[in-house]
Length: 212
Image (cartoon, rainbow, N blue to C red; front, side, top):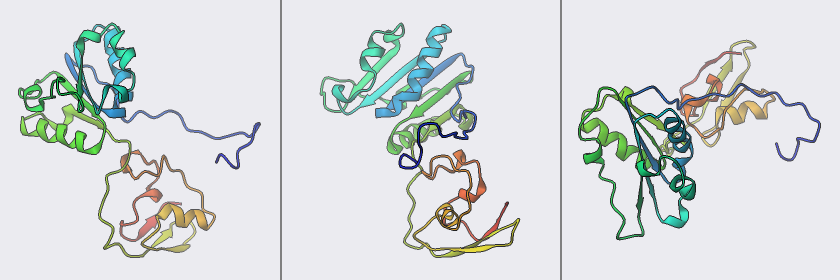
């Protein structure tokens, strides 16, 4: 894109999509790991403006690597922000079992960060009895899956009947693009719930028809 787009070109874009919405709640827990603070900071600022009851828990490797730390420390909700640092022995440790020990019917939990951090929060929440619809996540990339058993398969365009073989080392999107078929994709990271077109699903999906 950066090599082809020039000043004055007209681009077709979609309307903004929000796959990580903030829901009304009596109490909100925001848990961030590393750069996962990005969407949660916006939520914290929104909750603070509406005088909502919430807590922000932010984990990072070091203070130097904490994005928006000064912004949080000087915010109106600084007293509701809790920092946890890997490289500081004096820093408290985030005790997920204690934080999520009692499921609250009118509360919502939001988590964003590395997959290991997200999985720890989700598994702890579920073990403590939190319903799945009160645990919300935002992934920056699709989860890694084993690919050593992948094989080639065929996809067929429903509107034209054209068929293409997708080898094990390529995605459906890549093969279609190579053959001049343009489909809409979001970020190509493999987080399937964010993809607007079924054509862009993972290559391990079995053969089938693709709406054209």
